[in-house]
Amino acid sequence: MTNLNTKPNINNPDGFYAELLELHEHLDKDQSDALNARLILILANHIGDRKVLRQAFKIAQLANTSNKE
Amino acid sequence: MDKIFERPLYPYERHHDQDCAQPARHTVVVIGAGPIGLAAAIDLAQSDIPVVVIDDNDKVSWGSRAICFAKRPLEILDRLGCGDAFVNKGVTWNTGKVFFDERQVFEFNLLAEDGHKRPAFINLQQYYFEEYLIDRVRELQAQGKPIQLRGCNKLISIDQHKDHATIEIETPEEPYTLEADWVIACDGATSPVRSMVGLDFVGRVFEDNFLIADVIMDADFPTERWFWFDPPFNRGQSALLHKQPDGVWRIDLQLGWDIDKEQEKKPENVIPRLKAMLGDDVEFELEWVSIYTFQCRRMETFRKGRILFAGDAAHQVSPFGARGANSGLQDTDNLCWKLKLVIENKAPEKLLDTYDIERIHGANENILNSSRSTDFITPKSQTSRIFRDAVLNLAETTQFARPLVNSGRLSVPCTYHSSPLNGPDVASMPRRTKPGSPAIDTRVGQQWLIDLLGNKFHIIAINTPAPAELEVDNLTIETLQIPVTDEVTQRYLGDTKNAIYLIRPDQHVAARWEHFDQSQIEKALRQSIGKMLND
Figure 1 (cartoon, chains in turn blue, green):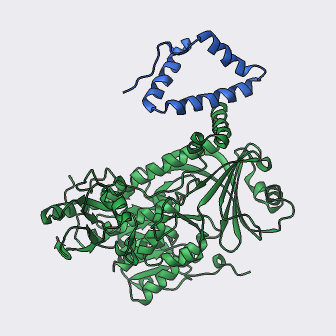
Figure 2 (cartoon, rainbow over the protein chains, first blue to last red; figure 1 turned 90 degrees about the vertical axis):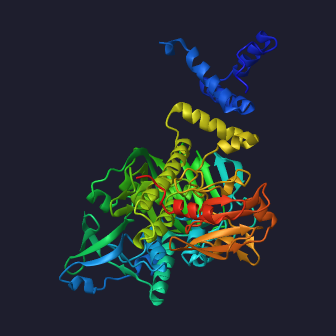
Figure 3 (cartoon, rainbow over the protein chains, first blue to last red; figure 1 turned 180 degrees about the vertical axis):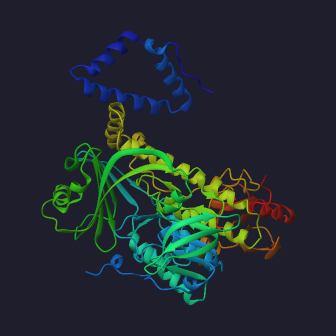
């Protein structure tokens, strides 16, 4: 069974980060939100495994400090 | 103008029950002569169980209402002896198109596979549906079958006793009282029976209004289901266009929550909306307009003593997915053979509790699917709208997003995989014909398997011997030897070379084995009629 990979897995992290932000340049809030939603769907489909996806949901949910209490 | 729904088809006639000093006792009384009540009555009467149907009206449903009928209910109508009338008149369709804003984002085809007598779906106005069932009632009456249809007989009260119910009925003349061993309440979403016995009907209310209009027009739209999300002619909302027989088109426009229903229903407000959708140059005539809201809910239990609830009286869903009438027909399909065996003392009364178990499973499945469709069609938050639009945008260019588009998950046959009536399974046989599933149609020589099954227990024997007929606990089981074909291998054998299937009177698989074994069959039959249920 595959588990969600939470170890560093991206080559050139700074490059990736810059590329991600570039995507959102010149977009307003609505356009950015829409793009993020599309991106989530595309990546989720690539992962496919519902168990791995659920692990990702959990981590995303808990990483927000205001949800930690 | 003489429309079928304006003509009394079962006008009030005085019955000698109304002149009895003591209330007449009937075996089964069905409340409501809608599609589900009529189907229940036909099912029982054709198996010689006497049945009286009462309805406060004397006509078929006004307006077209339910229009999409799926393959499994068509097979049930075949078993009721009247499928051809529906299919011959109905519009057969397979293609659905989904539009977002001004673009078509994708197209789907429901025609999954060959080798079935009936199509995936037909569209037919509810008034025709009811008319053809009434024709079937008349046909059964002509054959001397014990079925009565009493128009303008309005239920005013119902009381339950240990072994019967008392029903008080209002007529154009004086009221009268009837007794019934069993009552099937098919009196619709607002079921008076349900309120009279004080049963809850709780669920989720969807805060939305839909304008439903049936228009008669000579238009060259194809015979397809067209669904729009956020179209220019109905901004921020959805729309549906679907073809029915006689040049009638169903149009469904989402209106939102905060509207004045009476105003919106007026032709002067409806017509401009339709013109915006169809174009100014399309000539049309309004046949029927209604505004509906809906809830997804069900009764906690579909059986209360001697009263059994079916159809909208028992459960309600959103119209997306055609799960209303289609699931109601599966209710009575499930109920009637059980009730017959109980009435004939061939099965214990607790068999009726499995109607509750199996059809509550069906209702839950329908409510789940229909709530999910509704949440997709009318997003409840900004974020859900963002995701919905993301799915629709992606669907245009990428395959993966298309299964996420939900404009209604169209009714598929219900399977009772975890029913206590199920007997043994063989894991290497196909999943689609596991115990609990409805038998899957296939060609058998010049005939269709589905036409050879139903109304009694059958054994299907494939490539292995079995006695032609056998008698277990006063029930006759008839064997069908069917030849091996590619379809039969794919649908019934899977990885095995031979098979024995025990099929219930409602054409659902009760159990399956590789070889015939008398004691196994006996045990499975007893299980499937509720004799092994715990108290």
